[in-house]
Length: 236
Image (cartoon, rainbow, N blue to C red; front, side):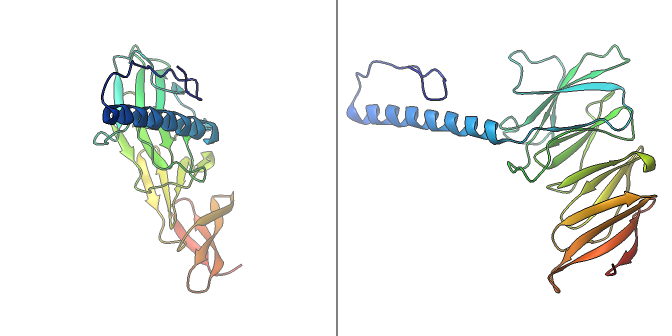
C-alpha cells in the first residue's frame, strides 16, 4: 500500500483485538502525516546560498539527505547535539590538495524559517568553510574537521563577505560579529533593539540602520570595519 507522498506502508493481516487494531491504524495515520509534513517542508524550504567570494582550497556539496553508506570520516556539529540528523545540513567536503579522504559534515539545524540563512560560505582562511543551517553558523577547519567554532548568534540573520577587508560578517538581532583569517576579529556594540539593516559598504565603512525601541524608529549608524568602531549614530 502507498501513502500520498509515495512512501511504502507495510500492511499486515489484522488478527488481533480491536484495541490493537486501533493502535495500528493510528500508527499508520501518524506515519502518513509525518511523511506529508516533511515533504511539504522540503518543498517550501528556501534554496541554500553558496558564496565562494574568498579563495579556498576545498570543494563542498550540500546533500539532499545523508548517504546510505556513510563515509569513514563523519563529523557532527555541535558535538553535543541531540537528534541532530532531523533537518540537519549534510555537507560532503573534499580538499583540493590533500591525500585526506572526503568527510561528511552534519550540521544541526537552527530554525525552520525562510527568514534565516542556510548555505555555504568561504572565509578569509582558505582552509576554513562556513556552513550555516537555519541560522546556526559553524566555521569548520577542513584540514582538521574536529576543530570548529559555532557563532554565538542564534540565529545569524545575515552573512556578508567583505573581501576588501578580509572579513566575513555575521549579523544578529542586535550586533555584528566580524570573522577574519585568524578567527574572530571584533564584535560591535549594540546597534539595534531588534534587527539590523545593512545599507551599504564603501571604503571600509559599513552604513546601516537599527531599530530603537524607545523612539520606535530606525536609527542610522556608520561603522569602521577595521575594528568595529561606531563612527556615527543617530544622524542621517
